[in-house]
Amino acid sequence: MEKQGIVSIWLGNLNGERDLEEYVALKYNEDGDSIPSPFFRDFHINQYETDEAFFEVEWLGENSKDIAKLLEGVSYEEVIIPKVKKYSELNKTYNSIILIYNFAYSGEVHSSGKFNFILCTNYN
Image (cartoon, rainbow, N blue to C red; front, side, top):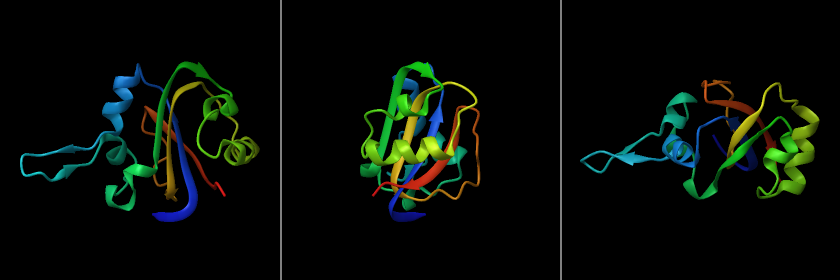
């Protein structure tokens, strides 16, 4: 659900930047209606509860188990990284990140096979 000042974080593993783009990209049918991305379908997210302008998506190329390294360079990193490190230890390596700002994910689905929901935290 839309919630100001909250960021929802997913980490995943994909084969490349193109795979990540396809995983999060909205597509349109012949009538011009949007079709939810595989990411939205996997995590049961209503695309109308998010704003594409507040997505931060990146394929890092290199796998890491260090959440600080994975989130290095994201918006509000100086606030987000200490909070995430405090509450989340990673059990496996990841090479891709999806952050949605001003969105509090319900946590209904924790894993899609490609991505894992990590947590929601405030970024202010």
